[in-house]
Image (cartoon, rainbow, N blue to C red; front, side):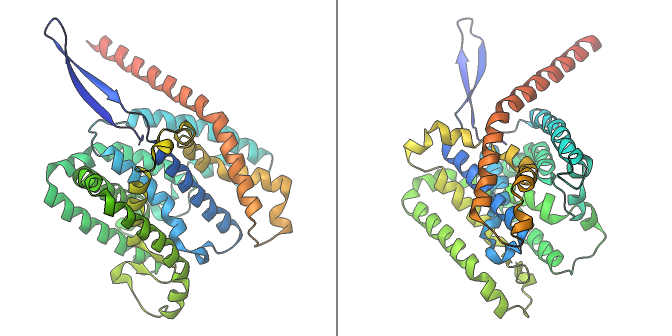
Length: 375
């Protein structure tokens, strides 16, 4: 979902006809900066995961992916138009690029699995590891978002309680999976809650708040903004010590509260942390909101997410870090990957954007010609 808002204006022309003009506001630089920072947490998780048990570092790092889904809901809820075709074209370009890049790395023996296994692995449907699961989830979310939005627009009270029930159900089921208590077959086999259904729950949660409470939040920003900052700081600090708390209560079963002590996670807190982050970053000082660099950074995370594993493999091949420093996390290694991913994404983002737009125009033209031929 793009971080843009569409405003429809009615303009009367001299011949008394009315034309609807759609005006797009510029991307919110604060949210674009947040996107980049969220990717930094995702990359930190993955680099930690690559070397040692990342869960010991605090589950606040897991805020990244959920907040991406919530950003989509926050800004996409007012739209009833589908961006599916445009995003599908972008996904196709990424897949083509991925086959080329990962195929080259596989041929050079820098990665162990072929590109087909990495890109087209739909293991996320069965709670398995899949490298490109995020882009498929976003594609699905883009497809169904107009219907999710209409559901929220339909009835305030009903949609509120339905979303609350859905959030509780999904997180409860997720904890059962983590604790090994969920059945291995049934509907869980086809739609794993901690992937597709959880993404929908994050989207709906943020979308409802944005649609019904956004104006009230802005009106009471004087006390809501400090509260969001306090909550986010407390969220990070508490997560750091949750591992110690987990050791104390490890024999207790908190599944009914969707709290997983075995994997050091408190699911519900992610929802409020994501909303707090969005509120904070859409209200950053104007010099940041108008900063073109911050606005540009938001274009990079999707490419960086999909290809940072490839960049890690290339850097590790020449740095030989894993062989010389097993199970040791180094900040230099992390920032080297972050810098390389940022540079490569900066080079590639505009060609990918141009290629996806060209593909979309081509498909649209073919569709129009086909329709005209039928007439």
